[in-house]
Image: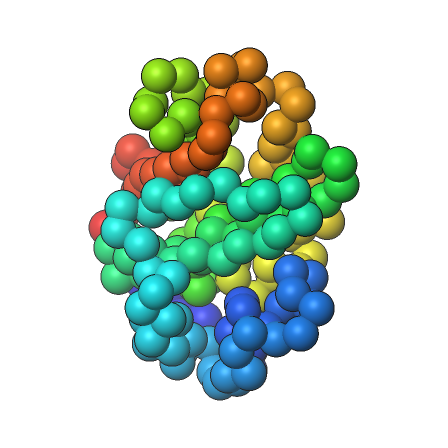
Length: 168
């Protein structure tokens, strides 16, 4: 695994991009962040499945993939639009090895839609990546199939996949 330079960073739950006031005030080096993220046990999901946030809400969840902690952030943008961003705390090279897909389904899994193929991004760049269209998904609830849109709950399932031919 390629090494990456030590830099000071904050917990994603302190992101001003997502939260008006920080939920967590932890700061540390990039080497320490994976250990810290695991301390948010109520937000570490395996499998990475959660109820889609209501209009106006932002959410952050974590999951383990290989030796990484993946951070998935959902940001309310406007009206019925949300942005989804997934990242790992590693080098830009390592981010090329993974992609993710987002499945939105009804609470009874009667209907679903899958957004595929985006690669993971680097965690320290999360705020920048929300503003870069190629680095995040945009989900417009109004454009989802009617059965999903009218469901009492929309369930999100995020799958992280190591791309074929990439080193372990």
